Image 1 (cartoon, one colour):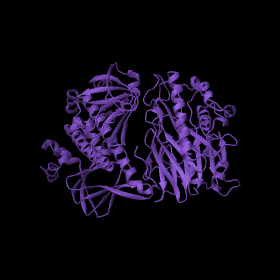
Image 2: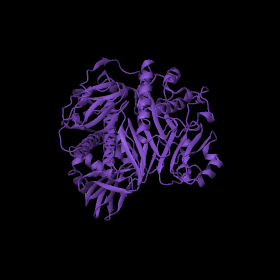
Image 3: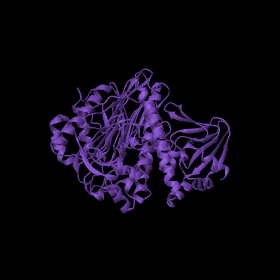
Image 4: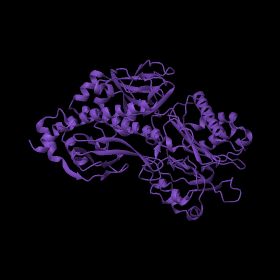
Length: 329
Length: 292
């Protein structure tokens, strides 16, 4: 085993990946040295690689309106950054700068895509591990947002009673295929995914999952919209909106912890309910529909993480607002 | 469809926001980055308040169905203007022979003698079924002034009709109440007709002194089975804002950021309203949940 592969075995993100697969992974990683203060990427730039810190540390900051910025994280040895755009191909959501002389290993998007295309076991394992990391980061962000609402325990919104789910047929398949997220998907994989659970209708303003409660199923919105909120006392922050094609409620199924947010229907909704057993089969499987399911879950975790960063920017930018700060929405 | 831009604050280079920035409003006519299907080729309009002009409380208005990228008059005008308030709009329509492209359908709308202007990014599905039910909520004198065929002009007349004095100078709070009341009327009429499909209503309403903008949709996520607008509506219709200076000297709000680098822009939350008021040391901005 090479030095790089041996180092990878100590990286928490890669825990559980077989030694032989780590050797394959080490072969596609590229080393890079950074001087203190060197900018690795700026917020908004297109992303093309995930970085694993070998030595040193990297500070991540968010820009705020009014030409100011706030530091949101420091990433040290064995930790990763840039993993979100590795999967969803977006732009960097923060600026990354070496805090000291630092060595990193890069996994280029193109190299990762090649692993995915070959259905290499490392690609599956890495996607699941990335989902774990993204889930943990999301929980961290949501905890910060909840703290911004002051002390207090989660409150189930009284105005949003528990949902009574009415069984329903599936949506029109032509409509589903026009959803951007499913347009390029193999028909058989899509069929497998869409038949993994049952369909239900729910009126607007109903709570599907309460914060701090264990969840036994995750959902995919087919029609309508579901709001993800944190509520403390009379105050609430919306941290996401799951419209058509978007999954939600999966955090608890990934890490076994209670739900980090309350999920309520903002519009009446037609939902695909994926129970825990079906979730686990899909999430840990290596079939075409498992691939699709992992992609859907990862995409929505990444979107949630990006969205969770935005309210934080709103909150951090309060001092840039004249007079009264904006009410969290 | 459509792209809108609102501004309130210190004098702003019109050339910069309309033409020069790398994702300027005019470039969004032929290269909108956050729309996948439609272009915004059905005309340009703006209302700009210039503090050094004659009667500065009245905006300069400009509307043309000429493609703004090739409009030399607009470029010439823009080079000379630095407004303290602006609403500009590029119109996008479905490629359909029933759609009328003409000056009377260009935003922002402003009836003669009124202080309030309005531009709309969105559309009310099945508006034809709702149109005449709106008449009972619109002052007759205002209803007679509707010249075009758009749902947006009717929304404008509704907002004016919800004001204490349609010809007065309402402050941000009254404008915000009028806009929320207008959305409630539209909701009720939609319910009366059983209209329950997605209809985005992103509005930008201003008097030149205060500004109100919404990011809102009725029945988001529900579409008719065969619908040309599906790809446009699927993501919640976008709205972004940025503020300048540590003490908020200005607010710039737009359907999509005016720069490719979105650093410094924030997304306006879905189902919300932004209000901006001119105060002694800048602009006072608030974001409110819009639950109608």
